[in-house]
Image (cartoon, rainbow, N blue to C red; front, side, top):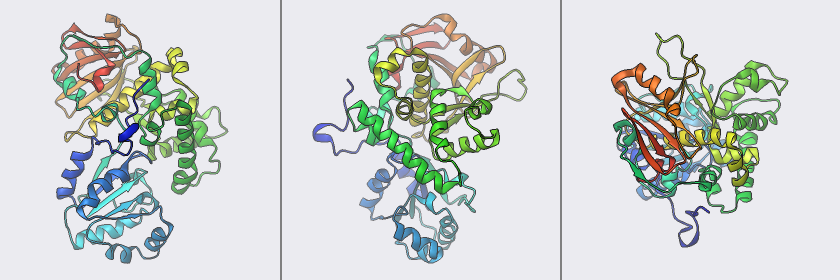
Length: 423
């Protein structure tokens, strides 16, 4: 059984977040910093942990009185704010950004406002100004495996340097399913019993739909969204097919696509774009859809560790999502930009995850739930390598094995544990 990082004497501790150094840097030179991500991912905890020792005052728009006061007189509300403040859940009142812009332009001071949002406010249609040049945006994900184990392993650095020495570690085995089902939301992780964790995720989804989604868009049948989310969870890591998603519902393809975009806006699903180049016509350009957290996905599907471990097809898809989210969570703490894609061509070659660092470096990752790797598992990686030439730094098959194995020319099989453990 996995250790619970919140058990025992340390149950009140705050785990150090990957995003913390970037938040400190942003506050040193940006007038406003927005921490956005899903509800219950730790945004408020992080903002208050950093801000309150520095004298920041805390206001939340989940407080009806504060929200009403801001709506009645946005300019006056902002002008009366203290010199340093935290404004929580700003997606509930995006019109506030216009007044914040005016106040920042009147007195431009680094680190003046810390904002948090449980929806991607930069995509909201009601948002009339993005505070370009005045606002730094940071994405906070649920907890990564490295954060949960207080590890400082940097898998992305090793990947982009092709730094994988042959070695042996302990295979994860049944523990892999347990990690996938646990997910990364702090309140769910703190529950050590599987069925109580599933109950938390179910309540979380209900709250998201009834509260945040209702505020963001007028939807006639809110009961469609949990069903659609469950369908996406059942087909996580699959290319987006709007017709297939629309089939169980009496809704148009356009409506379903709007719902998909809405779920993405509140960070319940992630879209993984296809990697392609304009001159390469045989590449498939449809994005993949991933559930945003595997713990939430498993709760939607009613899976426990044993049933997941026995259903190898579902395990494989959720493992691919699990790996992608681990990589996204690690990348969120980096000062350089890392972009993620998938690769697929019309000949059937594919790479589950393509990692690209600017125009300089690129790597590919295949994900397998099996305990062994064969040369045929590297077919897509070899094709991608041939296509990009010197930019290709490494190709890795992440698998549930115990040994780092080189297949020559920057191609490796690497245990999944390397995402959070030093090998």
